[in-house]
Amino acid sequence: MKWIFLFTFVVIIFASISCVSEQSKSIKQTTMNAHDLSHLSTAVFGAGCFWCVETQFQLLEGVDTVISGYAGGHVENPTYKEVCTGSTGHAEVCKIYYDSTKISYEDLLQAFFITHDPTQLNRQGNDVGTQYRSVIYYANEQEHQLAKSIIEKLNVSKAYEKPIVTELSPLPTFYVAEDYHQNYYNLNGSQPYCAFIIKPKRDHFEQVFKNRLKKKQ
Image 1 (cartoon, one colour):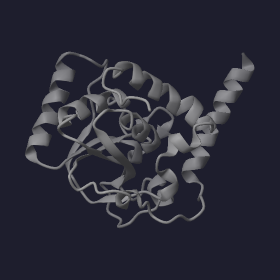
Image 2 (image 1 turned 135 degrees about the vertical axis):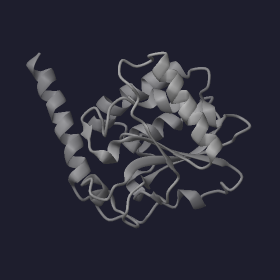
Image 3 (image 1 turned 60 degrees about the vertical axis):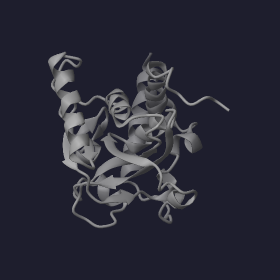
Image 4 (image 1 turned 180 degrees about the vertical axis):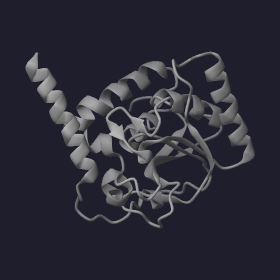
């Protein structure tokens, strides 16, 4: 069994290196200009590594586009390297463009609480730091109260062994992450981090929401 523990250790190290190493410079993501998104509603969530969050929400019927980025910090136009230091105050987040006639904000909130462990403070598993905090950035008071109500119900029902620590904050400026972060799992599924960290979360999400997934082409 030693090789299993050794391989797990290598995967963890790989993930850590990917966060702190400078990857090749890239033009900011232009996905938002690929087609008109102005008619869609949006939600901004942080639930750990945005690679994980992105690929899960992409599966849902009614979700049109998911863009990875940064929000909640004090530095304008932060880079991935800067955010990974934890010094900019940003969280890794995903901006979700969705058709409200097919999926509601409440549905997205329910999915949000399945994507990660909302009881972990400033971390998700081996990803540690404020940039990985659980956070809901609400655009209006209606979204705020809905999110607050769901958290209260989950805590009262003891859905988790520990209290939920998800941050609720007004929507700040959203900065689009570098191009190589977008659609990450779909483009890099064979990489160790994707295969051993992201895929299990994605598979679990698919099972829970099997009746709400997009039809496979």
